[in-house]
Image 1 (cartoon, rainbow, N blue to C red):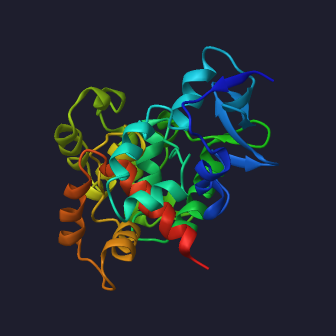
Image 2 (cartoon, rainbow, N blue to C red):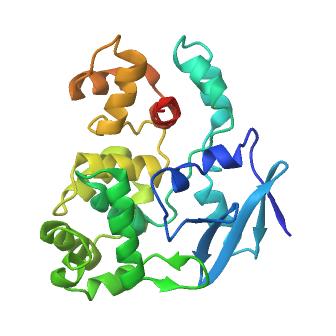
Amino acid sequence: MPRLQLPEPYAFELSTARYRAFGTDLANLWHEGGLHRVVGGREVRITAAPGGVEVEPHDAEIEPVVLKLLGAELDLDSFYAFAAAEPTLGPLADELRGLRPPLAVEPFESIVTSITAQQVSLHAAFAIRNRLIERFGVRVEHAYAFPARERLALAEPDEIAAIGFSRRKAEYVIGLARSDLDLSALALLPDDEVRAALTALPGIGEWTADWFLARHLARPHAWPAGDLALRKAASRFYGDGRDLSIEETRALGERFDPFQNLTAHYLLAGLLASRP
């Protein structure tokens, strides 16, 4: 099976844990010890290997998608050097060494996923997202291709509401699909302009824009201070026994400049690992 090298350190099981922690993800499917993703109509299986991962099938179309999915662009070495000087973050980074947060490959999928997760638990969000994938996506073997933007642009709000979305969220998804915004071109813009472009659309606020910056564009300064789970994680590790407010969480992010994004992911992973 062809092998794809990844920057070390890399812990495959740890890095892909989010695809198992909150339920099945049909578009990033954990199946029999491997991660399955549909690329260009073909189902790709990714498994752990020394120094990286084994990828089957593997070609010039698939390789950049897998590298993006597995967060190869994230600079862990510089982050670890920064974290070593932090009395709380340093030991956490050592404990989770090799965690390379996975990224959302497609911009449309990233935003729709965030819309799905607005104001609901991640377990509920995964379940609703899976129903969207089953209804409008394409199954290959085990995994599904996430619904294309063009397909959801043809849908009506009632169709999406029927699978568990609120009427308002259904309208947000269709509005995004039908908008003129070039989502791929957002990668060329600075963070503030990305936020402005996204939040101009109905139903997309700062929280969704921040996660797009963090989990699709891999911007190092992304810090979703309004995220409830991040606030809980920040409180757990930096709250001195109390819950931090959004404003306090936002201010805390400045402490981790320029590694807010990776810090957020490590705090969230640390919070998840600390639960019984």
